[in-house]
Image 1 (tube, rainbow, N blue to C red):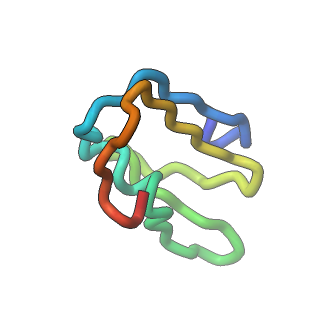
Image 2: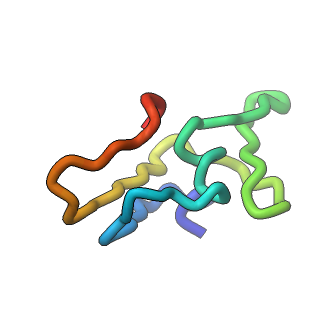
Length: 69
């Protein structure tokens, strides 16, 4: 709902591993159809709103995430 309506989303207490389902959102893997950006998330095609923001918070002092994150 946040992706399509332009709300901010917060994921708290992230561990060392990031679930693979979030990777299209994190990498902004979009497809352009006309003037709309489509994001494949969870087997669905969602229209990416320009104001959508994803915040990830962790309590780890020195997490090791891939460079795209």
